[in-house]
Each structure stands twice: as structure tokens, then as C-alpha cells.
Amino acid sequence: MNNVPAIIPAPAVTLKEIRMDSARFPRLSSYRREEAIAHLVTLVTQALMYKGMEPDTNKVAFTAAALYEELMQDPDGIGTPALSFEEIRRVIRRSVLGQGTELYGINVSSLYKALADYAQGEGHRAQLEANEATAIARKRAGQEAMSAIIEKYAARLVENSNNTER
Image (cartoon, rainbow, N blue to C red; front, side, top):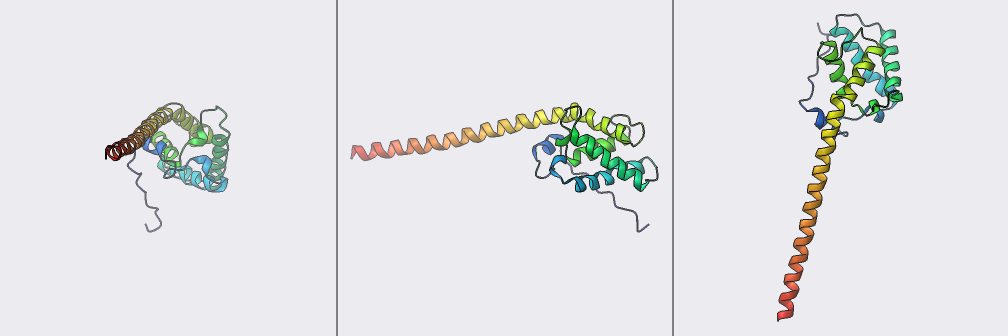
């Protein structure tokens, strides 16, 4: 029982927060190939274990490496290199549990399809929400900066008018 790995709980964040925070949730494309594949090996292994299957090291390594290549090549042009590992983990877990795209085995084709479906649907909507929130925050910051400039200018005008009255 001592060799059983602990299940690490997922962070309690929304997809929009994940999409807005690439520093906290780095994108697949920001990892070195070997590092990304190592993360995918973990996710593929977990998926197999969730399904009650015994992971074969060679098959898992092949699946992880081939999935990485497909995601990075982005053959459908849907932005899969921009997925974070948290998104990838969530999609695979939900699909394995029957709450997402139906998987026909834990293989490159099924995993890629689940991730592509996510990138085109829920992930795309989350990105649009993140873009809108970022635009609103930038606009608000710009307005605040402009208000500060106007306040300083008004204060100078008042000060100058007071100096000229003397």
C-alpha cells in the first residue's frame, strides 16, 4: 500500500482563469519536448489506470510521444499547442469517466479527438471569455491611467491659476 501514488486534487479554478494565466498554467508549446512527453506519460498512465487497465511502458511512451506530435503539429489548425496541461488533464479525465468525448480506448486517435473537440468547443469559449476579460481589464486600466493624468493636469491648472491671481 505504500507504493500507491497519491491523487493530487485539481486546482479549483475556472477554464477562463486557466486561459488567462499562462504563467500559472503554461501552454503545451512552452515546454521542451521531453518535459511535455513526460507529463503526457503521466496523464496516459492515469487514464489507463482509471479504466482498470495495466499500463504497458512501451505503449504508454509511444502514445504520449505520438499525442505530443499531433498536438504540436495541430493538423486541424484549432490551437492545440495553446492548451495547458491542466486543460489536457481535465479533458482526458472527464473523457475517461464518460463525461466528455467518448473514448474508444486509450490511444492517440481517441485522446487527440477528445482534446480537439475541447479546443473547438469549451476551450474556444473559455478563450473568448478570457480575451473579453483581458480587454475589459486593459480598458479599465487605461481609463484609470487617463483619470490620473487628467487629475494631475487639473491640479496644475488650479495651481497655475492661483499663482497668476497673486
